[in-house]
Amino acid sequence: MQQSNRKTDFLSYVGVFLAFAKNSLIRDMTFRTNFVLECVSSVAWTLMNVGFYLIVFNFTKSIGSNTGWGQYEFFVFLGTTWLINSIVQAFFMPNAEEFSELIRQGGLDFALLKPMDTQFLVSFRKVDWSALSNLLVAITLIVYSLWHMAIRPENPWQFDIVTLLLFVFYVGCGATMLYCLMTCLSATSIWLGRNQSLYDFWFYITNFSRYPMEIYQRGWGKPLWAVFTFIVPVLLVVNVPARILAQPLHPRAAWEWPLAIFAVVATFLCLVFSRWVFQRALISYRSASS
Amino acid sequence: MTPPQVRQDSLRLQIGTWITIFRIALEERLVYRGDFALGTLMRFLPIITQIFLWWAIFDSVNAGSVATTSLVGYSFPDMVAYYLLTMLARAFSSMPGLASTIARQIRDGEIKKFLIQPVDMLGFLFLGRVAHKVAYYSVAFLPFAFVFFLCRGYFENGWPSAINLFAFFLSMLMSFALGFFLEASLGLIGFWFLEVSALLFVYMLFSFFLSGHMFPLDMLPPSWSLVVNFLPFKYLAYFPAVVFLEKVQGTELAIDLAVEAAWVVFFVLLSRWLYARGVRHYSGYGG
Image 1 (cartoon, each protein chain N blue to C red):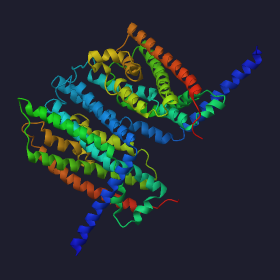
Image 2 (tube, each protein chain N blue to C red):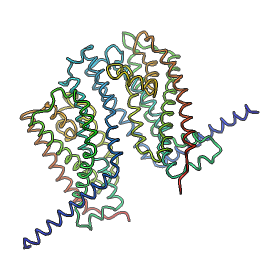
Image 3 (cartoon, each protein chain N blue to C red):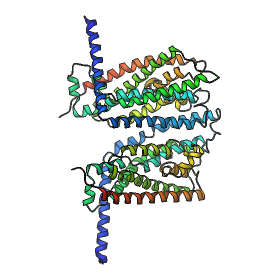
Image 4 (cartoon, one colour):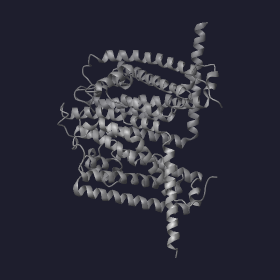
């Protein structure tokens, strides 16, 4: 009995999510030109970023000596960054932006009244389909770079289904960690009333995750590396899946597997922690006059 | 022939109007100063990742000897100083939302108020932006000074020579004017197209890449830099920074300053012309 209840519960959540996704798609398709423009603009920013690194790699063979992040390895890293970013921007970002408005105007009341999990309801209501255009660019970039790495004479990259599955799994972990971080950040808007610089703060934190973690492992970067690996684990988000796929070091360094295992633990802890923060924040919610 | 007394009075009234506009705009902008100062400090956070990224790049160019490596004439400290200076320049030359506001005012008819009031629109907006920058810098001075003090080690040559320092201030002031009139011209195109967001997007993309905000323009392949040198974008970020770092000197510096001044004059005239033509074309949309 309990078992079947849970199953129908899960199915109804999937159904609700699909309805949300469909609604968003219908809304996006109402303003089609706008949609196309948004796709073009996000793709253009991505390509500009690639352009910057193309210029950088005119002058150097790798990012950091002996790190193995040569041009194509690094482009896999960059592709992974954009892959995870586009997932976050499509599914989580529009909802986090709306959340502070819900609180300010008292709209959260309606979410609380619904017979569903509030966190689910407020964090999956909208899907920004145009952000997924970057997903295609990211995959293209990754495939293109891997192909280049596969045909080179020294240390050719070899396809391996386990690697690919691990990559997909860790991309999921990375997106989940970012989702948790975003939930924590947007939950603070319950306490602060308004959280306009949420997006800025988000940008500044995730900015650290966009580079191979080796670059921080020198001088005064070490404390930064420790904080963003073990306390706010944004450095794991891209680094772990990108390392697994691109394999910059041959053979893999001894610390790579412990890091990968730690990433799973960190994802789990992030989920628990963000859930706790969200519930605590809801208790403090006092609604707004309307 | 107007008697001199009347003309003097009207001039005084005119100046009084400008001062009032400036004061209102300034007060408006000082309301959220706490948020402002904190926001400015946060804006420097990406510099940290830039430092480590370039540290790693310099490290790999010459296998481990960062100190002796130079990339297109930039040492590693130069590179960091360059990014800090472009941030300063961008804070001067960027005009967030200017063009889109002008286009919106044309579209929804708000621009009519400038047509019936004895106030010049471009002058009004210009003073608004001057007030914004004055307010911005009076609050942002401390965070800026703090960050530059922390990073003073990256300025290997210390302060530039008096000439370059003067040229730096001049180029910053001109970059403000250039940024304003360039964006205003783009917004005024709205008289003909109404919706200019796509155009603005292209502009933003180009100005981000070609102003030197992302990387020193010296890194571009030679065939590119020929084109980039003829565009006005480089004066928005790259030029003030390299002037401070004394990478441009002597005759070259004088020529570049003259070209920048010419660009400013060009865009002042262009925006005036577009406004005059646009108002004639305008047919009063919106309610």
